Length: 157
Image (cartoon, rainbow, N blue to C red; front, side, top):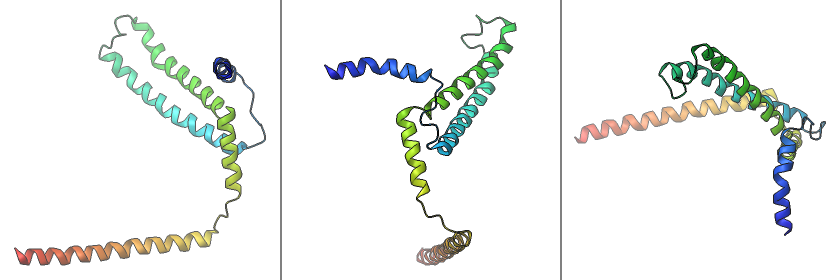
């Protein structure tokens, strides 16, 4: 019985959370949540931009809505619909980073990232040089093996 009560209240709390403008634990995980929100909005913006590019071609081909759409309304659909979709996606991104379970995850990520011992610029440069040198050395070794077996197999033929 208790499980049924939890399930019956879940949609109302989700709806309440979706339309709330409050910030969950305002001072915790702030940078991580802001960066995540900007990344979600940027990804959504790219999708909406692509939609705005596709809409004119879709309507020009005579899609199913073209017959029911007056010619004057095409400009409205081309610009207003993507803007409304972008705004809705931005609001969902803002609410997503303030949804308690996801916000707790992002707060945990930020606290763990604060514990990481980051290398100095010199260490990064030295490590990168070693990796790049090893990549070139291994590619030359593989090229030498390839040439060797090429000559061996051509001689056998």
